[in-house]
Length: 168
Image (cartoon, rainbow, N blue to C red; front, side):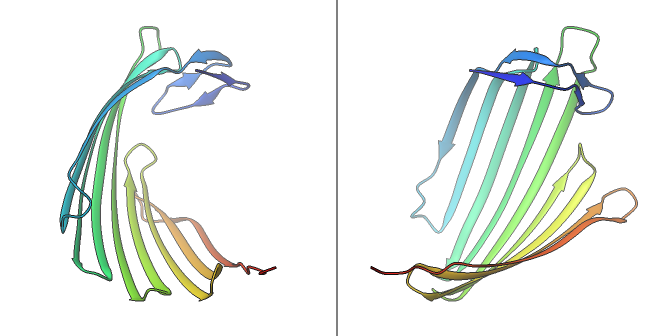
């Protein structure tokens, strides 16, 4: 596996990835408890090629479904990028939380919260899904991104999407 970078870009603090072709092999080890349990645990470790360097990553997630129509999850990860050349090594961390509330099987509200250390970003997202007919859904999604350092709004969006299935 490889990736071709057409134009240089900055990744992390003072780390520039030059244009070129990069190997992207990966080894991942994951462990999971059964998803049928009321509380589940997931974890993983990854070693991979990373734009001429190496990326080491650790992830963990805890999920709970205390009621059939209520779901909670918290996940996090830490990555460490190492380069043998003049580029700076860096660490990044993310933390995500999710609450899913199903009013009925056809009407579901998801609340997602995320923090990204590398981008100094806090993100809140709500998604309402209503299945109004078999294979036909209405989605309303609102996203608000905030700079974690000064709390200034970086991005907001409201998306409304409808799908309809025609039966032949």
